[in-house]
Image (tube, rainbow, N blue to C red; front, side, top):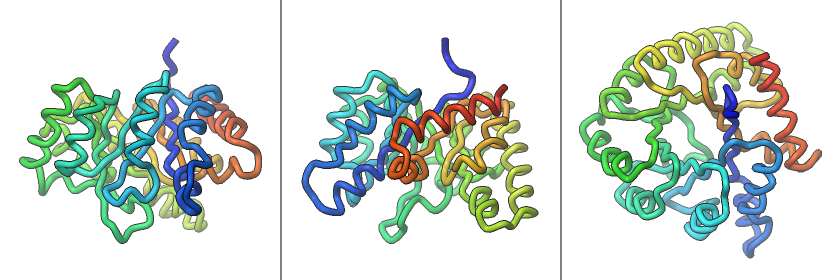
Length: 247
């Protein structure tokens, strides 16, 4: 039976560790298979333009070996579109990308780039991939994502998580209120709502409890926690907290 709230596990930073030394280990595909066994409903991998972590070969192997859906995160470039059209993953999530950033720092600017993005995602939809747009919890961006034909939005939870971690609880509560309002608004437009970025055991519950949110994508924290408790244990605990939030 399909879960009310799905967990997508991002394996990018297994590849980060591998690439720090070179060679083949640790293997992101092995991590993806372990995540499947631990209760992940899908696997997320971001193929960056500079290939700083996930490689083209990783995407080839994931497409060949996964039994759960692959969510391919990528920038809106011709190169990435061609790769997605060749593989036809279950989902494609369009994200902003800058070479100098350590990780994705904010949501995609859709409202100012509607025409190009509409033409960019149309072939992906026609190829059978579900198109998601990674955006801030902002009404104009959600409206623009809807207009260009995205089926899914993923709300950026980074500001909420940062405020929680830094003890800025008024800011955290304001961010949570904004996420709550915009999740409801996106759902009213017929968009499927996902959320992710920076989520941990300590802050995931209020996001997981939002009834409009259908999927959380979590990676860095789970890979870091796996150093101490193992990957299966870290994922199972996140799955338990998520399920309890929907209790």
